[in-house]
Amino acid sequence: MHTVTVHQVPTLVLGEGCARAAGAWLASRGYRCPLMVTGRSGESLKAQLRELWKGEGLELRSVSPVPPEPTVRQYGAVLREAREQEPDAVVGHGQFTKGFGGWVGGPEGSGTHSDNARPS
Image 1: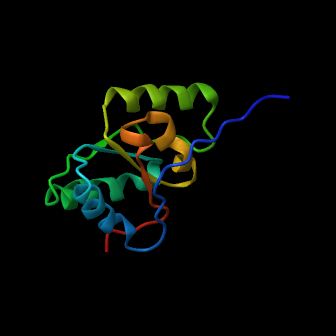
Image 2: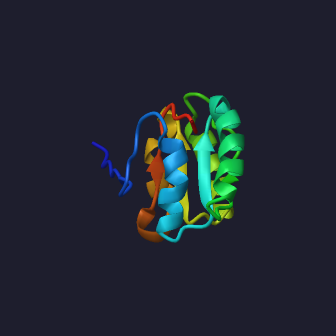
C-alpha cells in the first residue's frame, strides 16, 4: 500500500464572479504575484484577469496550459515551470488545479481556486 498525502489550500472559492473577487482578496492580503494554472479552456479568462487585476496592483503570472488528464511527467513539467515563476499565491481554473497550490508552495501554501469562473 502507498502512502498518500493531500495538501489543501487554506482558501477555496467556487462560483460565478469569484474570479473578479479573487483579485481584491489577494491584494487585501498583500499578495502581488499570483500564478494562474489552467488548461486551454482558461486561456481567455487568464487574459481577462491579467488586465482586470492590474488595477488591484497584481502581476498575474502563468504557466503553459495543462493538458487534460496529464501524465506524471506532464504534471512535473508544469510544476517546475510554476516554481520558476516564484508566485506568492496560486489561482486555478479547472479540475486539475484544485490541489496545485499546495504543491507550488508560497506563504502557508497559499492558493485560491475558481472553477468555471467568469470575471463578470
